[in-house]
Length: 327
Ligand code: KIV
Image 1 (cartoon, rainbow, N blue to C red):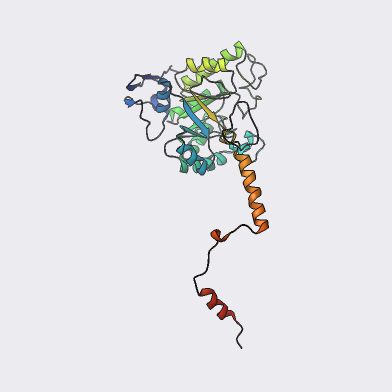
Image 2 (image 1 turned 90 degrees about the horizontal axis):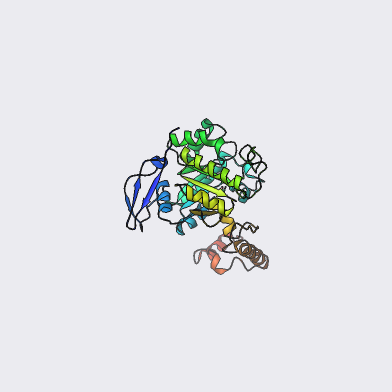
């Protein structure tokens, strides 16, 4: 496999994107003033943001109203993650999520955004071979309207990444803690690494392994790399060594961007994770609102005059006449 590289070169006024490279499919020779964001976020724009030292803000989204909120806030990537399973669908783990689930939720998110790049997760067992990856990524793009797909893992998925990028599908990688495998599959258990702890890259050997996997994914053509639950120092090393942007979740301050599960940010998931920050307590507010509604219904305080619709004036009297017993 030929080694391909990307170059995202910035100057103070112009960003000159040279196409040599991994981002061949995404980058176009041209100029883009620093202050201008394109009408739609593209993989090449994300590369350019990294080159300019501008951080990338990503969030999960699973439905249209939330996607609209993300769009309004100028979020760059709307990730339809397989976290939809545990956060929205009531599944016990990511392994229950199907391609149909992701297509369905991606369609909803697509309707809510114009600018943000819609990235859809390839769920568990949907990319066990390059053929399966191509087929299912095609569904997420063509039926769901995704702009790109994300898959978990390193060396074992390189053929899948190559098959998809060859077919023109933008692909993002995901290393570190990988929820689909929960540390149980080949990717997470190797002779070199032994049993994997939840936070990855804490030892020199693990960090070196992570860097190697990240480099190979970049060579295979991924346009971005999610790093989940990785020691900050290891994530920094990976970020500095790659030309594609890294998007961290629990991976410290030096990644090129950050992603959070939107429910954690809104305080709607009921759990407080060290890797996240709840910017509001939406869950508590929602619980208060629901209890107030129930109280009002039970007390007859809802609906009130302003919530009801009336018959045309005079019509009620006419109706009563119509219904009056004829003598
Ligand atoms: O599914 C998801 O939400 C993700 C994030 C944790 C990055 O993959």
